[in-house]
Every structure is written in structure tokens, then in C-alpha cells.
Length: 155
Image (tube, rainbow, N blue to C red):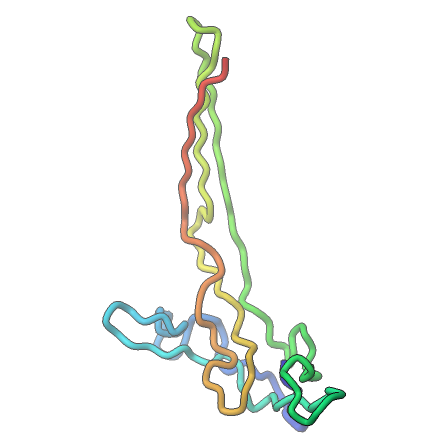
């Protein structure tokens, strides 16, 4: 995690809504290349608001990265938050009596991510000076719509 840059004022979010750019909403905004094409992810967080963390280790001058803690807050530095997230899973169940067998047939249908809404992953937080991947969203954190069906007999 980096340190906050001293003297930096403002919100470090470069572009407003995740997944959009002046060119519209496309897969290239996330760095996901269409088949045969090449795209680079858009940085949503301005790296100028951050700097290399100060060395706080207690061993030799060449500390491993685990000792470079940084002073940036772990939640919402400069008001930057992860993309919003919502998901709706639905299900329906119906039982049908089987009178001759004294049993019932049960049918179930479940739909995961019913609205097929994309939930973007958080921006990349691995900071290094001159990094083009810092603050870029490079994927999604949920699955596309999925239907599951089941049928069974209770006796």
C-alpha cells in the first residue's frame, strides 16, 4: 500500500463511473480485449496522489516489501471507493402430487445473477512509480447469469 502524496488536493478518481470512458462503455475500458483486438485498461485512480511508502523496517536497508506498510487509509483514500455491487438470485419450487404412488414430484428452478448485472473488481492497488496498472480495473468479480434446474421425487 502506498503513502499519500503530500500536497495532493482533490479526488484521485480520474474517470467518473467504472467501465465508462469518453468513448462509451466497452470491454476495452476494463482492459478486456475483444477477439483479435488489443486493449489497455484505463486508469481510474490518479497515481500522482500517492508515493512510494517510507521504509519502516528494522533490519537492513534492503527490506522486503512486507515492511513497507504505507500511510494511505485502507478504506476510501481521497474518497475513492470500489465499484458498487448488487446481485439478485431467485428461485422457484413447485411440487406435484403423484396420487397413485403416494408421493410427490418436486421441480425447482434457480437463477443466479438474475439481472445479469456486471460487478466490476476493485481497482488494482499494487503501486509502483510509473505503473500503468495502478488504479485500473482489469476484471469482474461475479459470474454471468446461471440457471439451475432440479427435479426429484419424494416418497
